[in-house]
Structures are given as C-alpha cells and as structure tokens.
Image (cartoon, rainbow, N blue to C red; front, side, top):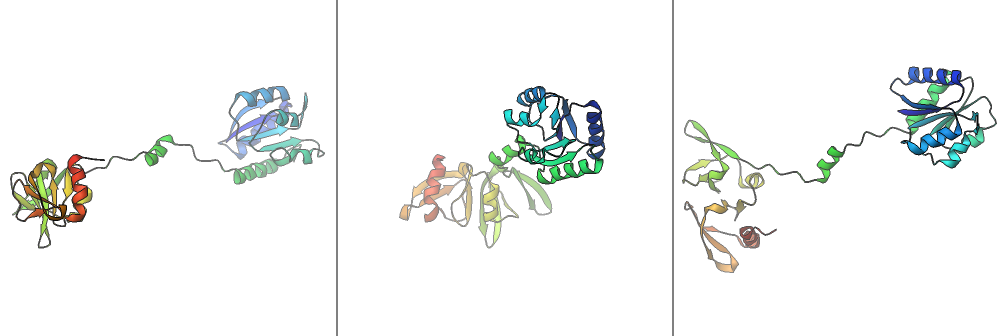
Length: 253
C-alpha cells in the first residue's frame, strides 16, 4: 500500500507516520507534502498512490483546492481540527473524516475500511497473461517403450511406419518391418502423434507419410494405399477421411 501524506504540521505528520507504521507495517509513505502547490505538482508528476491521508487546512489554503485542479481517483482520508468541512470532504473520494488529535484506533478503522472497499489488485503478470493468449507448442510422442519376449526396448518415432489394430490389440510396425504391441489404442495415439507426419486413414490404421509407397484411385473417391513395409490388410482411406487425407498430403492449412 502506497500512501501519500499531506500535512503541514511537523508534529502531526510525525505522529501520523508512527501510527501508520504500527497499524500497517507493509505500507510505504511515498511523500509528506506540506502545501497545495507542492501536492498538485507531485500528483501531476508521479503515479497515483493507493491512498491519500490529507489535512484540510494547509498553510496556503484548504486542501480541497488540490482535488479541484488534479483528477484524483484514489480514496482520501481527511484529517482536521474542525468538523465543518465534513460535507465537502465527502464530495472528494473521502472514505473517512478524522478529527484531530487523531486516535490510533480511529486511523486503524479508516485504513481497514480502505482495505475492505479498495482491495489491492494482484500485480499484473505479463508472462502469465501471454501463456493464455499465445498457443503453446504441442508436445508429441518422441519414442515408445515396447516389449518383445522378456525384453524391453524403445522405438523412436522416426522409425515407425504405421500403427494398426487387430483383434482388439494395437501394434506398431517399424520401417524395418518389425512388429510390437503398444499400450495405446488408435484414438489415444491420434492425440500423441505429430499430425503433419501421421494420419489416421481409417478405423484400423494410422500411417506415417514416409511409409506410403504407392497410391491408387479407389471407388467413391477413396484412395488405396500400398505401404512400405507392406501391411497385413488392405489399406484404404475411408470416405469420410478422404478430403482431409488429400489436404494432409499437400500439407494444406
């Protein structure tokens, strides 16, 4: 909490400073200003404080003059030895009006009222904001852990020719024509694979673009694909996927 203090009587200013520190140790008093002229200058040249605590009667006039010449958005706690200014004070962002000599509990109540009415916003975090407005790069699978016999090995994604399902078991076939079972079904694999490299041509196969050996026109605008290494089944792009498949081949966005 940044507080601007406007008080021309040194003993009163020192007393206020002492009470502020006791009531709100984390508060920072930006400045103690003693006149209307210097207050107007300060407010025009500095960022607005969170709270102003201002005496009404200053050496060069009433502090209300400050708020007539400078647009002040922050709340104000007015202090004075007289009570006749109360109505005018509440026309100027006032949240409290304390009569001198100011009591510590009265100032504490006024600051608590400020904190309740004007909760300080969390610091603006541009990096956090950018995380929401900038799309994050998708992390795709780089390798798979597979089993063969009693052994376990990894297969790099660059070595995969295609995935397919058979009898409810999911397989990975490498470019060297080695076949391994995988723990993911094709629906899950679709979300794990780089979409510019892999495409699901039908309900049974996901293929890598490098594994396409030949393509032929098939019925109803479908495409028959010959894979390398050869697949166990006939690999035909389904009707509903044909349009997207042709876009994928040309990498159209």
